[in-house]
Image 1 (cartoon, one colour):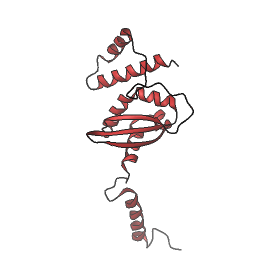
Image 2 (image 1 turned 120 degrees about the vertical axis):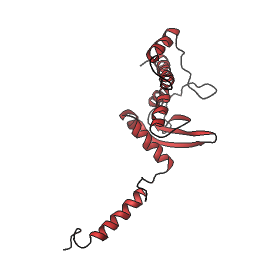
Image 3 (image 1 turned 135 degrees about the vertical axis):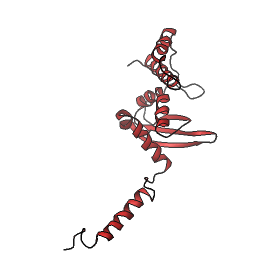
Image 4 (image 1 turned 180 degrees about the horizontal axis):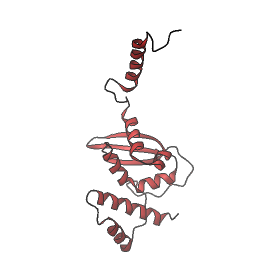
Length: 168
């Protein structure tokens, strides 16, 4: 009975090599379309919660800027939560090698859930913060350098506005 490591080593290596080349390409990187690469980057730069609730991703080209990433999620609650932190997600993705002009979160399939009221630009209407709440954001982010300070401030403001509008 012939064994794979005997006389057929060269043939087996060539077969394995052709399978790996088919999967990874001649350059060694996985052959993926832009949507799969964006989803892989999203999964790599984020944590367990984001990975658990992500159903898919879509890259939409922007004619005059970096592309727009659309992330499909499994619940309306996560759409709202992730929208509150979208500036942080943009920073993480840029650091992970995927610069974007915008990120959008959408429900993967329409569920019979009450929609939030939206303004003319399609943004959710959240309650504004008081001056004391804004001072809290400034005190928490004052020691940070740019552009992190701006991104963290925006994320904190959106998170506080969301919590104020929809207390848990």
